[in-house]
Amino acid sequence: LAKTTQPISMDSYEGQEVNITCSHNNIATNDYITWYQQFPSQGPRFIIQGYKTKVTNEVASLFIPADRKSSTLSLPRVSLSDTAVYYCLVANHLTSNTGKLIFGQGTTLQVKP
Amino acid sequence: EAQVTQNPRYLITVTGKKLTVTCSQNMNHEYMSWYRQDPGLGLRQIYYSMNVEVTDKGDVPEGYKVSRKEKRNFPLILESPSPNQTSLYFCASSGVGQGHTGELFFGEGSRLTVL
Image (cartoon, rainbow over all chains, first blue to last red; front, side, top):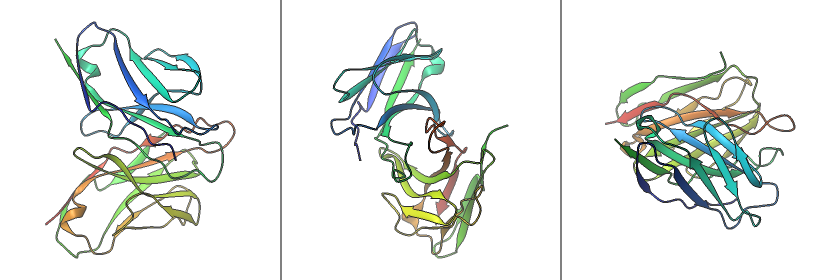
């Protein structure tokens, strides 16, 4: 199982781009990288997922280098409402024997006015 | 609406009094799992189930039981709760296999306090 390491906390200001990096040195060939966002007193929710290179959706971008040992979640022009905890998860959901999941501690992003 | 529903959302109980936290999903997902969240420790997996009648331990299973008799339900049972099980609990479900991204759908959480 791939364990992940993220910064515990980050601060930013409204309108800035925020990059949160996750380290996952023992990622397996079939593992995908998924990021979740969690607001206080709510369950985490899916933001973005990728396998390699770059993925972009309406909320964020995910950059994955060729060796896949790390990934970077990029949030463009953050607002106060992006203040949350962000989790990186490395796992393979395409087979039937990969139910055990290890979330890291997450990164608490504080966006200031 | 696709959702994962947990009950109760809040519960205060006493040491040793058995309790069950229910979890139900309406997305026909094979995979379901339970997590506890404590300050500074992130999300830790308690148990998971790959399908009906198939369950297995996560990272912190001690003091918990689960069952998966139906596809949509995955209750978490605390036979004899202790104060160290005071925590915020989340249930999640996901589709498995081709056609699924593995995206986890989480419930809103159940805050449990054991006195």
